[in-house]
Structure formats: C-alpha cells, structure tokens
Image (cartoon, rainbow, N blue to C red; front, side, top):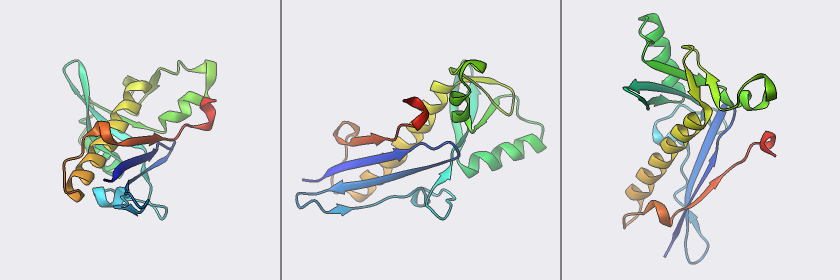
Length: 159
C-alpha cells in the first residue's frame, strides 16, 4: 500500500507543489510539478503566486491562477471589464507590513478589498484539486483527500 504525500510551498512571488507516493519499500513515484497541471513555470518549476477571483453574488470563486490569472486580468483590463474581478499578487507582503495594514485585508489591482485568509484558502484549494486530479489519474484506486499527508511550508515572517 502506498501513502500519497502532497507538499506545497506557497511563496510570495512564486509557488510550487510536489505530489508523490511512498510505497512499502519507501520508493517515491509520481512526482508532480505545476508544469504537469498546464502552468507556465520558471527554471525551478515554480508558478506565479497570483490569483484572479470572480464575484458570484456574495462569494468569490477562483477564475484562474498563476500566469493565466495575470494574462486573464490583463485582457479584462484592456476591455475595461474588471468590475466583478479581483486580481491578487504579492499578497504575502501585506503580512510583513505590521501595524500599517490590517493583515486580514488585502488590496487588489482592481482596488477591491479581499481578506487574505480567503486568498490563501482559494490558492490552497486550487493546489488540492490539482493534486487530487493527478493522484486519481495515476493511481489504480481512488485517493481520498483524508488519506493524503499534506505538507505546507510556513513563511519565516509567521514566527
């Protein structure tokens, strides 16, 4: 029996995820980088840490992530169609500004306020869904999210 492990590094400007399975003989297989999820990555296999959220009534849903979010928002800006969207990039920098900024609220390029906890949750949800898709495509049996060992890096500024 193998144990799936998902490790996520949520970086300030770039993020990465590795999905692997550890078997009975401690062999690691099925390593996943964002490239396999269709993301544009840098030389280190990391994707841009930015997200485009769309308003659906009182809730925000993830429209796109990474370089796609950046290009989608640029296209909407050219069309002057950013009213129902929030583009968030470099949001973790707000956590470091201390008393100057309420750390629960981030300001986006569309000047819409969004709670940072929601931004982080939406990005982690994207990584979770992609990891589950990959594991379920590559494994012989369906992988339950509760059977996965999840690893999340913690920024140094959160000490």
